[in-house]
Length: 150
Image (cartoon, rainbow, N blue to C red; front, side):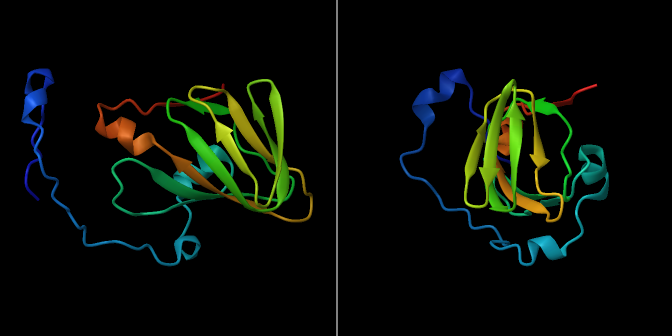
């Protein structure tokens, strides 16, 4: 892999007039939920999380699950998140606001807002797709930070 050129403030006039497509080898991640959930990451958050392993430099996707009656840790981060609920029903506490959700709903988590997610169904699991801009922040200078409540 070749070294990527780093541009600085004085290089603004050196933006190339054309853009080259860099086609990575891996363009699909098959069977995302067939892979084991990241054990340590999932245990720390108290719910299973499956990473979608694709070479995006700007966004990340994960599939999160909440066991019947389960909840995630209260946490916050410097990146935005949009959750798309795949199945189940429950709610998210975002700061002091309770946001009810069910399959087919999307929920926005603002930057640095304390939040957690709760599966309101005691019999069925809930699943959601989380889209976050953490890689973009990480690639811009390690700005993606997450903090768990104590």
